[in-house]
Length: 79
Image (cartoon, rainbow, N blue to C red; front, side, top):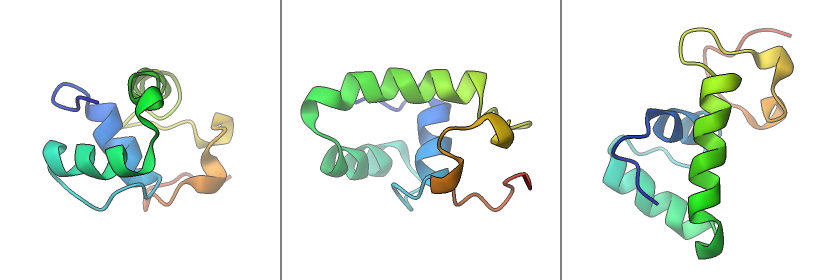
């Protein structure tokens, strides 16, 4: 699991309340505790894809999001 170049992982992990941390190292540590090791790489790829296609930083498409019911973002769009 490597977060250094993956802002979507940082942002979405916090939106989904998987971590409260604010540094890549601490977020990575939190995610490693909740994800099976076999899923680390797939999780990274999926969250990056999700961040680019659905949960863009400036204009999230909350109405199209499969994870919307798990999202705790303050800026979540009203459905």
